[in-house]
Image (cartoon, rainbow, N blue to C red; front, top):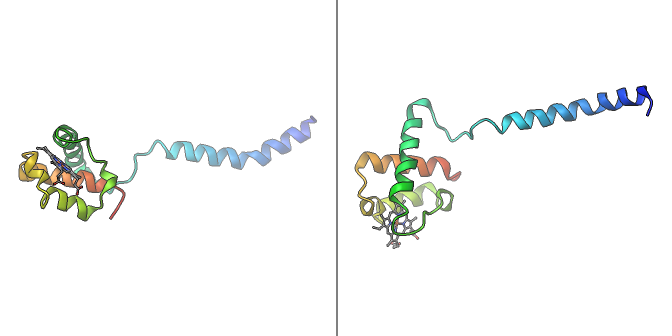
Length: 105
Ligand code: HEC
């Protein structure tokens, strides 16, 4: 390979390398779940409660398995919040968590 060819190849591949680097660094950023600093604590708390209290009677249901409205129904009408003996603020935190990470409306 001539030096000129190597230089031309390097130039041609530079944008590809930049794009790849861009993607790699983008993956290090936390997914945007609409969390602000104010409610991040609630989400962490909600996740803890969800894992600790919602998997005792049945396997944990993936947050993504239900829409926001369905989660609301499950917690209230199907009485899962009551079954898990969640206080009102804890019910809020669990609902905030599952609806933030379910990736659905
Ligand atoms: C005391 C036992 C118990 C606890 C604790 C409990 N569940 Fe359940 N869960 C059940 C039973 C029994 C069913 C199935 C009967 C039904 O659908 O009403 C069920 C069903 C479900 C379903 C499926 C509903 C559907 O429509 O198919 C979801 C989702 C669910 N639970 C989520 C939760 C979440 C979230 C929590 C924590 C807040 C929780 N569960 C805590 C007993 C429990």
